[in-house]
Length: 41
Image (cartoon, rainbow, N blue to C red; front, top):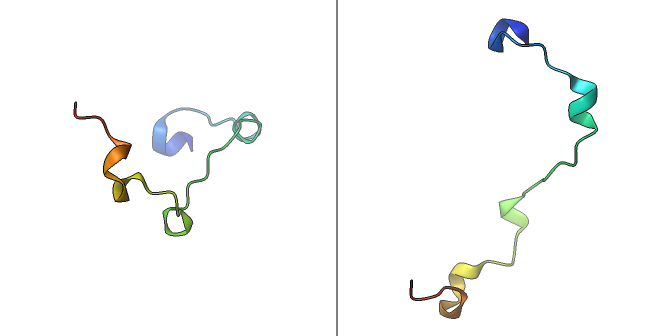
């Protein structure tokens, strides 16, 4: 990783962080379908 970024990557610290996994194809809670999901602003 240092070759790419110039910095050492602490994989163990990264693995200890909570990860958000977003799978759009499987998401069925889409606000775009509902006109009341947004304010006029």
